[in-house]
Length: 86
Image (cartoon, rainbow, N blue to C red; front, side, top):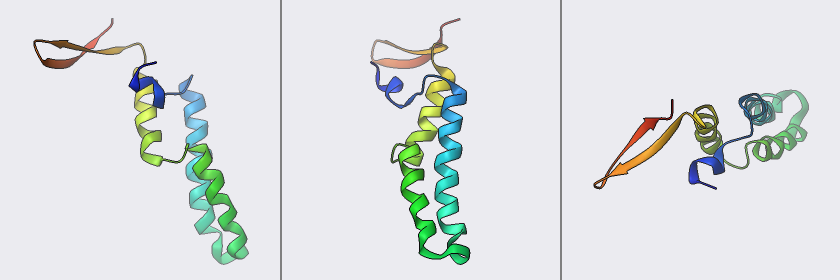
């Protein structure tokens, strides 16, 4: 498995659902704090699990999921660039 594929999901919709759950949980944990108190902080671990612990990695994974099969890295004479598979 390549390094790019480690962050990617099986499909874009599945990755977006993970993002909605993850970022929604994180935002909800703090937005609901004034309304329901410290109990709302229980949403933060849910959000982090959905994002697999790293919001930045989720964004990288989204890019990898979208470009899966469309781009590949090609290195010639020590110079690497992205090349379209199409």
